[in-house]
Image (cartoon, rainbow, N blue to C red):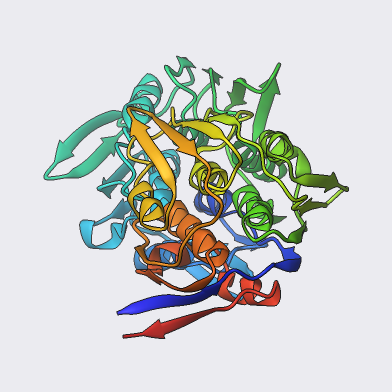
Length: 419
C-alpha cells in the first residue's frame, strides 16, 4: 500500500507555480470533440484524472497526442459517442462528454457519472436542460442513454440551481442547435467562462449578459480548430495559500488569477493572514495569530466548496470558535474524524461544523478518502510536529500536480513510500 510519510512542524516558505485548472480542462477537452481538425490545448495539468480522461478519449477513437502540459486533440475521424462502465473510473469530467456527444452525434451513452465520493451529484439539471433542447433520455442498467432523433433546437432554460456541470453540458449541446438557447441562473464559475472563451475563439456565437448568470448561445454550423491555454487552478492556489497559515510560513503562488480567489482571500484576511496581491501572484504570510471566522460555501463568486476542507483544517488552529457550513455537497466533512484524531476540537451538526481552535495538531495516521479532503489531511500533517502518515494518496494524485515536489521545495518533509 502506498502512503505519504510526513515529518511535520516545519515552517514552509517559498514559491509555488500553479498548474492548469483541473475543472477547466475537462469541458475544454470535451469541446474539442465538436471540431474537425487539430486543437492544441496548453497548460494541461499533469494529474491522474486528466490522464484517465485522455485515455478514455483514445479508447473511443479520438486522436490524442500528449506532450509536456499540452495535448493535441483531433476528432476529425469517427469516434464512438459512448463511455462504457469499465471506463468511467470515477472521473467527474466524464459528464461534460454528454453535451459534446449530443452536439456532434445527436446521441450519447455514458455509464455512472463519476467524481469523489462526497455525496450525491444529481444530474437532474443536466437532463432538464438537455430535454428542453430536444434530447430524449433513458436509463439502461446504470447507463444513461441520450438520443435526439429530430435534432437540437434552441430554447429558454432556467436552472433550479446554478449547476456547473449542467451549464457546461447545455452550452456544449447548444453550440450547433437550431436557433438561440438562453440559460438563466447559469453557473458563473471561471471554468464556465474559460469554456465560453474557447468556444468563441473557435467560432461559436455566445453572449454572457449581466452578472454572468444569463448565457445566450446562438447556434452555428461549424467550429474551427484553434490553439488555446486553459486558466490556472484556483483551488490549487487556495490550497497553498492556506498551507502558509497551517505551517506559520510565507508562500507565494505564481501564475494564478487573483480575481478568481476573492472570496478565499477575504476569508484568509479575516483569519489574520497577511495577503498581498499582484497581477498574477498572491503572497500569504502568517502573522503570529489566527482569528476564528464563519465560512459558508456557495456557488461562485461565493466561497468554493472545493476549498472548504482546507479552510476547515486551518480553523482548527484559530484562536476561538469558528463555524463552517457546507451548502453545495453532502458528506464533505469526512476528514473530521481524522482531524479529531490529530487533536482538533470539531463537532458536526447537519451541514455545519463547529470548530474550537487548539494550540497545535498532533501527528497521526490518517486516510485520504477523497481529493480535497485528502489534500487537507496532508496539510494538517505538515502542521503537526512529528511523523505522520497519509494513506491512499492516490486520491490527492487525482487533482494536484507534483504536489510532493512543490511541498518539498517549500521546505516540507514528505515522501511517498510503500508498505
